[in-house]
Image 1 (cartoon, rainbow, N blue to C red):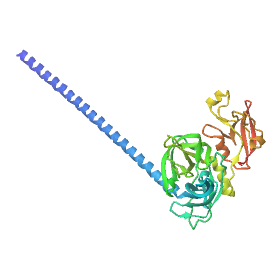
Image 2 (image 1 turned 135 degrees about the vertical axis):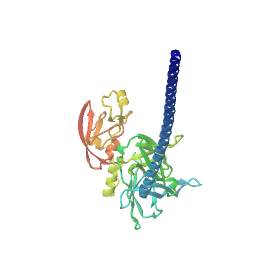
Image 3 (image 1 turned 135 degrees about the horizontal axis):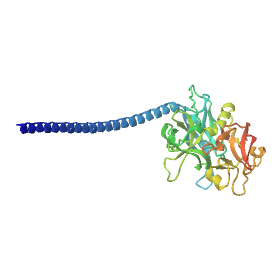
Image 4 (image 1 turned 90 degrees about the vertical axis):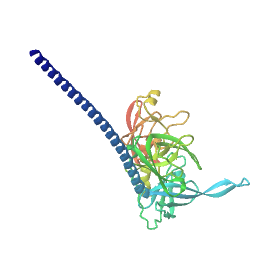
Length: 389
């Protein structure tokens, strides 16, 4: 009898242990399944949220670009030009022809001053008109002036004399020196001379580019340009390059030729602020001129030339040319070959801020302090800027 009781007790205990083990197994399985389902649901939720964020980002960016197109677009004009050119006739004799072309410009003030590219307003212009964003053509337009063909700054200014009762909306100028590589930009222009604004977007992909640009008037060397992948099409020349805040940071001026695609170039707006100020105040186009030839230094170039100073404008050129132009403001101020200009009016020259940019912020006739390094020693020189001839 005692043995049976013992067997019964052991059987009950084994049953209890089996039930407990089964309970633990079910609990563990339930936990695993629940955890797997939870993790899967979390991943799906995260993926859905990521897709929503991406979609919202695209929508937000599209909204911003649309707003820029609507607001800045009101300040952008089509520039319609008739110029006189000489070609050979059928008999090989020179003959005068009228040539029509079109480009883009943007309004700088309510009085109707318009900024565009020099190559949009070629020599021999006989007639200029502008078309506003609403389609109104204004024909009483004069050319205030343009930089010389030899000048690396490709700009010209127009004046709308008869606004025909239209309220002109000027652009807002930004600071191109604050722009960074990778920053989002929008290009607005009159594509293909159709007198309708087109809008493209992209990023700033480089600074300080120098190119040779060719048009009907010849080949010009342009310096210190922004590089952008925002499409700049034929007819866009002279239009604004705008940051995401709707501020103009550049003037669209050229597109890469050959096999390169989606590479455009724009003049940083800081390079021409001094000229703009002079035009708005005096109605005269005067480009501040220093008169030096130089190499823009970086660490590699400085190391090659065995220089301790790694940033600045090194007044040195190869060959027989003098880096200091005779009779120039630099010559009058006593600048010498192998001087390194490191600051202009206290602002440092860097890989992103060139001598052209810093000089361009000042006016003709202004006295500017240059910080230079000569023979390893820092010193200051005062130079009076003159107008480029």
